[in-house]
Image (tube, rainbow over all chains, first blue to last red):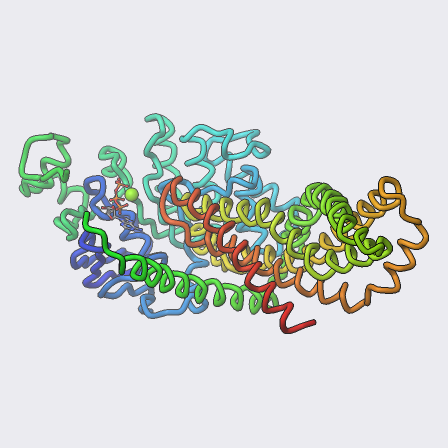
Length: 250
Length: 260
Ligand SMILES: Nc1ncnc2c1ncn2[C@@H]1O[C@H](COP(=O)(O)OP(=O)(O)OP(=O)(O)O)[C@@H](O)[C@H]1O
Ligand SMILES: [Mg+2]
């Protein structure tokens, strides 16, 4: 699915978060969004999944502008999305197994045994075994994230939207998740939008990278474009230096 | 700061505006949740879970408060009725007050404290931790999934709890009257049955159903629209109890005026 974001603006009170974002998410490719903490990455993807309404601008998914759609009209599009929230957003009244099974039970007619199989399979993909009966409150932060991932991929969605899938994971586990994203893209042609603070992982998985700064896209390009850029703000960010033109907001 | 006597009017005016907005939101949430009752999918499991939480798990506090309300009421009325030798009216007057007023209202207030605040806290936590957002991104209508079962279960369970309250209250007053005040037991029962109409009971139960709707809708509304953070969740729970208690008392007045 192709997603075109056009002139997207969003403010909360006086806080201008998105100040005219133009960005294309190419079909079947992985686009990584990077930027400082608080720069509006999560806000941007919440617009794509319809949780926030823009002040102005458009979000066009496969030719349909979703910003004007009613929730009921939007659900058809949403069914193609698998979303991992930054906070994981697991249902804390359900076990891990029930969390991953939930989208399957709601949207497929599969038998409980089949659902159980898929739950096990998806949990295994994210490196979890034998945790089905635990509650989210009994998991570590990294485990929650991976359960959230398993839930997001449960229905084999066409579009994966991952808000910091590897933050809080050890390097080996991060690489496992990166491989998961690359493999689903390669084999199933999934479109992925990934928010990440992990520069090495970003260069590994991204076809396209967009960097947000002060409510705008400062650079959109391939990983090579990013490696070769002379833009001082992007350079400073990639080289993780505190000194430079990039302003750290108080 | 200068003393401004008009400030109290400003304060009340401002509060009133906020209250009206809130009531509007609560009412539209109610309509939405009831409308979604008739739209598939129907998730029976969620209803049963809520009925258990609201009904079964409230039965003990309803039992306790019902028994003591009946007892204290028998005791209080006995002082008055004894003055003019009308002790035989203790039974009927306790039963009438329980069925018409005290049963539904006290059950409503007790359940508000337990269930209304819990609903607000639970939905508030789900809001703050993005679980409600997660539901919508899975194309599940969160109002239908979360609020509809709570509202319907509460509407069904409150009358049942009220029946329990009335029943236990009358038993409490019977024990008080017969064993402690020495009133004839058969007389107590026959007078009570003679004086209490079925209408008194079912209007009381109708009230209870309305209170049930108030408790669940207010609790859910406050939680669903909770502000960020732990503070927001706490505020939602308090607000739920305050608003639904006041609403129950106000609704009680109008229902009494209209229905009896
Ligand atoms: N619901 C909201 N109400 C008000 N302000 C909000 C809301 N959501 C986000 N913001 C503000 O929008 C800005 C961007 O937040 P966002 O969560 O998108 O940052 P981010 O880029 O995802 O940061 P991080 O890398 O730390 O996750 C912040 O200043 C935040 O305070
Ligand atoms: Mg974020």
